[in-house]
Image (cartoon, rainbow, N blue to C red; front, side, top):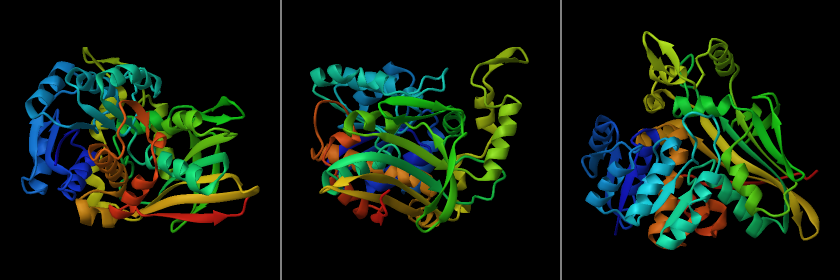
Length: 394
């Protein structure tokens, strides 16, 4: 049995804790740490004291090094903020401990996520004999594995991928985000970006949309965005002609967001306020509902999947590989809404495969670089069953 150190005690961290405790034959000792100890204490109370908690400022490498030295984990699971990926990776390098995260690095002062910063650690992790698994959430994460599964079993050649993320949940709030507001709003207000015919193409934020008929939740308007799994899948799925990412938003959400943008509340550069510097988006995050608090009130379902087109045995083929998740079912199981659940469950599965050495290779890796079959089996086993829908090829 292994010891796992989970850094980050938000909604996703809570799900990871609950799901690790469901697999005691792998996760013998679970430690949860956060900058805010009270968040760890709330989760510890939910699981009736079956975890150890601690405090750490994950921006400070020396604090994380000391935390790792104190608890001696076999694996660090980073579900803190994307800004903290590199400091935590530095701490893992210093201590010789494997690393896993759910989202790639993003600098605090620029709304830009990019794998290059983490891929640059590859040689150092190889030389240290330790492994980093990047993006073991849902998107990125499960969507990468869906593509790898399709490449292995469903297609001889993949030509087009559309990753579609729909949340048909209703939390009853005029405006709230289902995961960290700061990260969510930075992501949504960034320019769109997609890969087509060998080059990256850029659009204005949310300027391109389409209607899509999602299984179990119906027709929704989805907007083209840039998402980090596009960057790695372009590298690892040969022969792609195009790959795009789409996410649904309600008209109410977009109206509120435009107003906030127009009055400057989504800015990430510091401004002077009453004699000190504040970042408007950080202030907005402080006044919006905490995503973890939305669980009891959120009803409806999510549907996330990959629409993939290509060639199989000389004939065109088109499929949609997807999962549907119910917000209230997630809350009954682990006290969380489906957005945190669909990220936390894959983080646990990725950690399980690393700790049992099913996925184990020194270096820095993306999800689609490993055999998808054991991960797909565990999705069905641990709460995220998937289906394949055959569609009419173009």
